[in-house]
Structure formats: structure tokens, C-alpha cells
Length: 129
Length: 136
Image 1 (cartoon, chains in turn yellow, purple):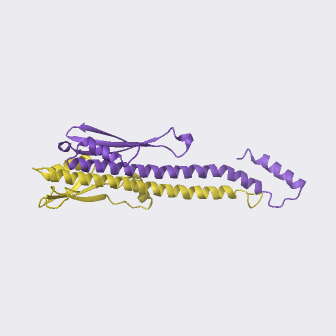
Image 2 (cartoon, each protein chain N blue to C red):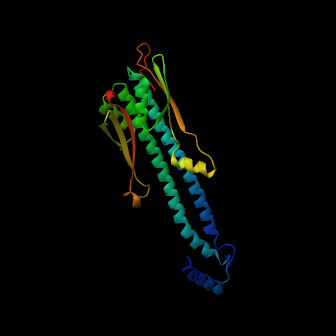
Image 3 (cartoon, rainbow over the protein chains, first blue to last red):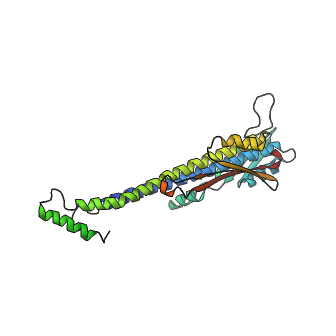
């Protein structure tokens, strides 16, 4: 630095680029983690609704068990006609919470709704989430 | 870094005495610094690529697990459903095990780092879905 203009320039550029890439990586990692957890909540909601729809006695108890077995919380469960509608949630993943904490905020829980009913012979679709 | 500086400075100084420098006498330093920094950048880039691979494989595994669970819910035999779901994730393995009153379908795969040197250190990814036992 004392000897001329160029000395240290490569290090400065390199570290700047490294910093930018690392930040991009952090963002990518939290987005990926969010997507993965969201997918798991979606799966839990599907299974929960299907379990409710296939339960003869107490649909919401079955939905509850299925949600818990998939590491999610059953927020709401309703029987609408022959369909079961559930809302299932899970807290945002750790990395996302940390990134939000940098801004002094808290991310919302991930909530996914799903509906399932018994197979209906009149239309060609079987029970779907 | 600090240990190499006098050697390089001597070389540059020697050149400067022999014939007048065309560019700044620090040009050599920049090359040395770049030589140190570029591997770091390359490592970060490799880590990023690995990360993207981990994310995408993880999501595919989750898709496969979910597809298997849906098929089983429709009345498909568990093994058939799992085998069909695995077709979408080449190289992945799956297991179906009974735990209490639920059946757990586990789909897993190894992601290897995108450099030959580290390919012996795979990351093991798994996605599971727990379904009521009555289904299977």
C-alpha cells in the first residue's frame, strides 16, 4: 500500500467478490431451505387432508395425527360435505429466521392449506390434496 | 504473504534497475495477490454450485416422497408407489418402514461436491413422509 497504487488491489477486489459471492450464497441457501421446508409442509398438509378424508370416525383427529407425524402443526380442520379441509403450519427454517433477525424482524410461519375428499365415481379424479 | 513480499520486491527492483519499468513496479505484486485470491474465489464458486445441487436434489427427493405418499393413499401398493416415485430421481434409494401406527417412506440420496478431490465426502440427503398405517 505504501509502495504504489496497485499493491493490494487484487486482494481488495478478490475479497469484495468473495464477500458478494458469499452473500449470494447465504441468500440462495435460505431460499433453498425455505423451499424445502415449504415443500415438507405441503406434503404434511396433503397427507393430513387425505388421512382426514379417509377416516370414518373422526376426520380431524386423523388429520391431526398425520400432521404431527410429519412434523407440522394442524392449525385448522373443517369437514365440508364429504371433503376435509386442513391448514397446516410450521415455523420458518432456522436460516431464514436468522436472515430476518438481521433486519430485526421475524418471518411468518409457513402455512399451507389442502383439501381432500373421497373418490368420486362421477368425475374421473380420485381424492386429491 | 508477508514472507514472500521481500523476494518479489527484490525481483521487481532488479528489473527496474536493469531496464526502466514500462508499467508500475507493483504490477508483479498484483499478480501474486491475484494468485492467492483466485483460489479463494474458486472455492466459493464451487461451494455455491454445491449448494445449488444440494437444494435441487433435496427438492426432488421431497417431490418423490410426496408422490409416493399420494399414490399409496390412492390404494397403490407401497413398494410399487415408491418404485415409481424413485424413477424421477436417478440414483436415489428409498425405504418403507413401519413405526407404531404410521408408515414412514424415506427417500435419500448422496450429493457429491462438484470437485474430484472432495468427491469422497458426499452429503447425505433424506426426505421422509409419514403416512397412516391403514393406507399401506
